[in-house]
Image 1 (spheres, one colour):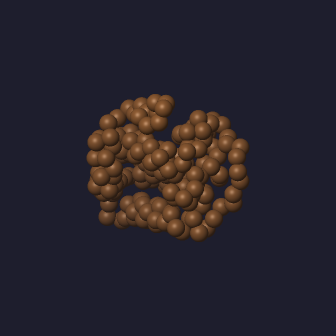
Image 2 (cartoon, rainbow, N blue to C red):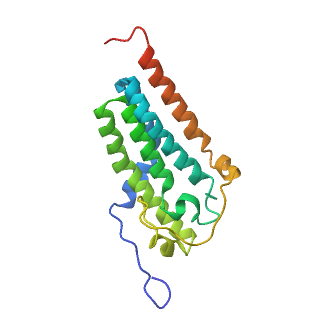
Length: 196
């Protein structure tokens, strides 16, 4: 407590040591997801035609968000941030859903959902704590814009998409990862020696 008034302490649904542990485990979990994807995927032409456009929609959302994000320098409230506070995570979820549909394996979907609930939700909470500490206006913004669903619109400042932000945020890595996943799915679809 500082000053004459008690400060409002946010309530979190998890303990910070858990969130720190999960943050450290995101990269190893990513490798496990990659192995599960490589092993379990059983794509068909139809699953690719349905799943890949959905994933591309998620990539587009991530790219749009990255082009409006000046990390730790300015509170992002334009572009997709006018509709939801975490468009990069929502984009990731949409990409993953499309990949799961393209891969045609329910177990893979359960694994992705499990990782999102146990790893990404705490990461979102930690990131929001960080933003609250950096930007005094964050609470005001968060009270008006939903975390994961576009239920309202922020009507503040306006800014255009910036390719410089996109590049600085290394969003091209998501595009490269998607391209590799598509290449693997196509390989598994047309691999002549695969077992039926």
